[in-house]
Image 1 (cartoon, one colour):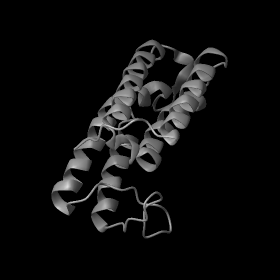
Image 2: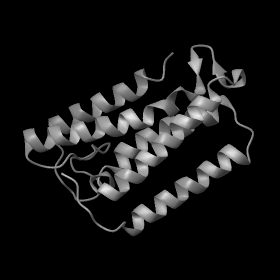
Image 3: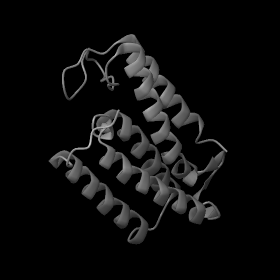
Image 4: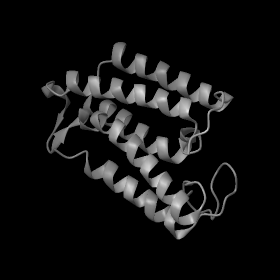
Length: 158
């Protein structure tokens, strides 16, 4: 199911960029609800949309699990900060979802492998192929993405 390859330049670039962004946001900038919410939600969206191919690599997946544990810790720290509260929830709610969404992604990958006999790909807007390998997108790819997106969105609510 997983491959065990060295990290690609793309993997190194986005992981280092993400780490730098995270350090800057959580140490140098005054946090607002919009920043925390955007950080967590966009991370989870980008994982599926841009990192679906990288998450097939066991080493990349393990790194993201580590990031997911860091997100859980940040959630634990930030959840009591009332300045990050929205009317219908807390901006840090999304941080607790990284680990479950990583696991959901792998379950969806297995479903795609079992049903379609091919890897899960991310639908790209206005295209019939994925963004990396020009693999044709099927109706099941759309359904699996919709499942992931709905879980990501609906788990943000208190």
